[in-house]
Image (cartoon, rainbow, N blue to C red; front, side):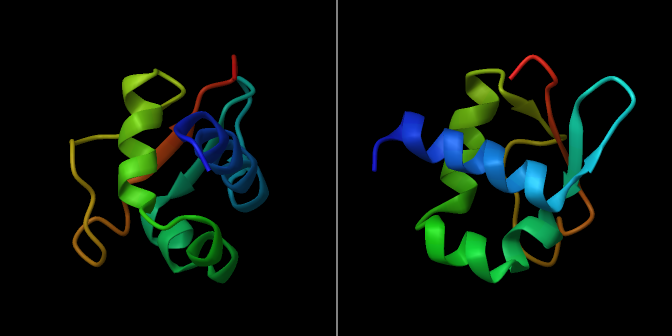
Length: 82
C-alpha cells in the first residue's frame, strides 16, 4: 500500500471513530485511533501515516511525534476540505 492509499484509509478511519464538528471536520484522539483493533490491522506504522497526512495538510495535531500513552489525549483533526 502506498502513502496516498494509507492516507485515504486514515481519513476513513478518523471519520468512523471521530466526531463530526460543526465546520465539517472530524476530531478523534490519538489514543482512540491507536487502540482501535481495525486501525492496528490496517496501519503498519500509524504514526508515520499521521505525519505524512499532516505534511500534506490533510489533518492537524499538536506536536510532531505522537507516542502511545503520553499523547493519548492529543486531538487529531481531519480537515473538512478532505
